[in-house]
Amino acid sequence: MPAIELREATKRYDTGGEVVEALSGVDLTVDRGEFVSIIGPSGSGKSTLLNLLGLLDSPTTGEVWIGDQDVTDLTDENATLLRREQVGFIFQDFYLLPTLTAVENVTVPTVFTPGPPATDRAESLLARVGLADRLSHLPTELSGGQQQRVAIARSLINNPQIVLADEPTGNLDREIGTSILDELRRITDNGVSVIAVTHDELVNEYADRVVELVDGVWQ
Ligand SMILES: Nc1ncnc2c1ncn2[C@@H]1O[C@H](COP(=O)(O)OP(=O)(O)O)[C@@H](O)[C@H]1O
Ligand SMILES: [Mg+2]
Image (cartoon, rainbow, N blue to C red; front, top):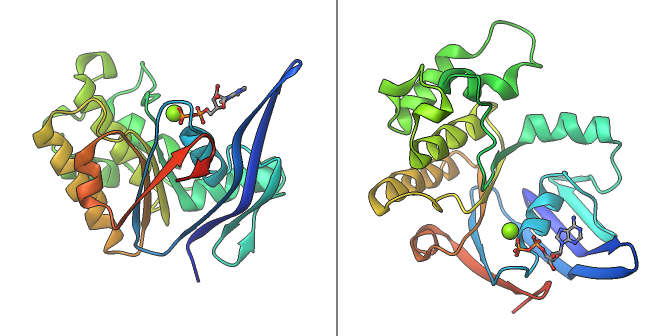
């Protein structure tokens, strides 16, 4: 059974008169433990596709499946619950909360989970991405690359089955980028699926499969 699928997914944005078709009948099947890299020019629909996979938006037509469940038409509440349990996001712009420390930012996705904050786990994830000595730093006290690594640790805090990454190495030098990719590759060993949108050739070296999106269709 695939981990996540798009079936004939189309997405149209209607911005008052002008309709943009960002995705035009896209199929995608990603297996457990598979690392897929999606490339394509700006405006080709890559972020739209990640939003559909992450249940942040619904397709205009077509279906989204997670495991054996059709999740296309979940209520917002059920989509939120499923997303929290199954999906980790690494956004292009990090979205770290400016008043929280690195550890606190990493625990944010767990605040709805009963029990004590997942501080120990947050600290060990930060150590894994090379930030053991930056636990109490605020985002403004971290470099772009360090903020990116905090965002990666945060994406893993709930043990997701699927990790979606928009330009995960975009702001990193090659050495740190390599360590991040090693980490993403390592989590696939535990059956986690990683889907990364990127311009970075380095990511493609780590991926099991590279697919190219142009004008909302596969090349
Ligand atoms: N919320 C939106 N409203 C209207 N048009 C959008 C919206 N989001 C994206 N688009 C349009 O959809 C197309 C694909 O965008 P996007 O998925 O962001 O591409 P990419 O991530 O590959 O750069 C672009 O033409 C973009 O302008
Ligand atoms: Mg984008």
